[in-house]
Image 1 (cartoon, rainbow, N blue to C red):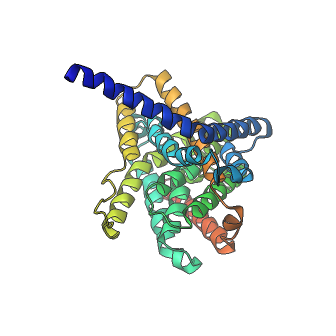
Image 2 (image 1 turned 90 degrees about the horizontal axis):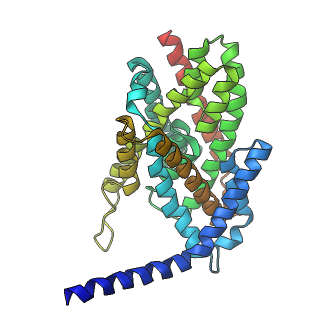
Image 3 (image 1 turned 45 degrees about the vertical axis):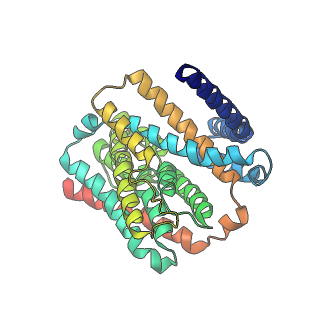
Length: 345
């Protein structure tokens, strides 16, 4: 009886997976096509791929509203997003970051915490609630669009969830691109040496790609320092998401069915495990590079899907106060890191 039951279960599981894949394939395929197109355009026109994927997704948003593509688009925007965030853990190596020294680590990590606290404190003056504040401040403080998507995954959903995420991704990407051009000029004006410039760029610019671009535009030493400092901020993603998840879980009322969200989101566990393995050198460099590339592509596909699920009119209705809020948060972390550099030197 047992010998025949196992093959039958495996057959049922295989059929279930095939039928599920058949349902998801159209939407996932469209999301992949949009992401690949965005990457192609980004390489040829020197524009952030994340921003292009989001805009292209919005342009074909009708594909995410009805028809066969809907399940796959939803899967890409949620499941692939979480997998991409989990794989970000391979970028983190505590052993390498420890070499930067305690004062620099405390300055950078303190800047992350202070920026998030600042955003939560001033949100009401701009007419926004804690969800928008945590989303924008977290993305500014940690790693731009990637952080925004990670934080959005643990926020309670409401009618404006997609609108907030899309605005934040667009906003931090544009501001990060502006900073990539403006901040190296400011670093020269401040007469920073190569290390100071790297600390400033890595501690303030939102997205990793723009940090690298800005740093190496000054010198190789500045680029290396900026990248390492940026990785301190990236390593803060898991603690921030974990603490936010626990606070949100404690504040929310129990659902009617009695089921609470998981104490620790699965993608955060994945991030921590991969970061730990990479920190102890247990992930070969080639595999780490491969997983990092996979993470980038998964996030690109996910943001394309988020764009396809969006409504452009709703995104544009966010208003000038939201833009000002994001700019103020950006200026806050820049001022904080500048002050810290002056104190440390």
